Length: 148
Image (tube, rainbow, N blue to C red; front, top):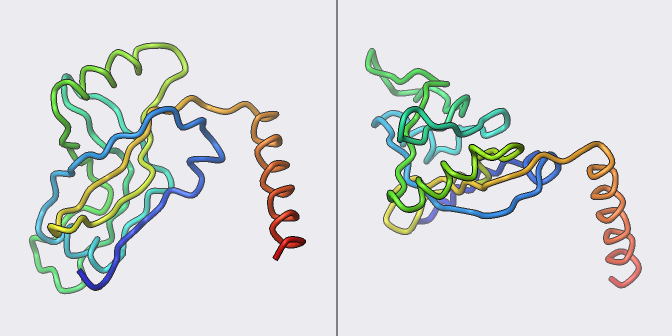
């Protein structure tokens, strides 16, 4: 594909320790995939949770398709994630433990033209962990400036 769609959740690595990543398919309607191909989606406040045995992504905003008619989609509806049973079982057992959550990191279109969502098993950072991360980034920025 010519236009590369990579929509990132920039706050994810700042707010969480990302432990393990999975790539999941998303169950979408026709107007939703068209909006994603135009790059009109946000992962800012989104999160993943289980409804029964199925994993859903909540609060992922996909703007309404500009050329959509009466059958346009709802921008913040719950969308089912498509993973195999083994991965779902693994995530379910981890999420039941205290402190673990599942967050979307990256929304992209693969080489077959399908929308995929990279999700991560994550553990929340404390305030002092966030400060430590910012210090490390600042030091790395200084090293890159002086070396380049």
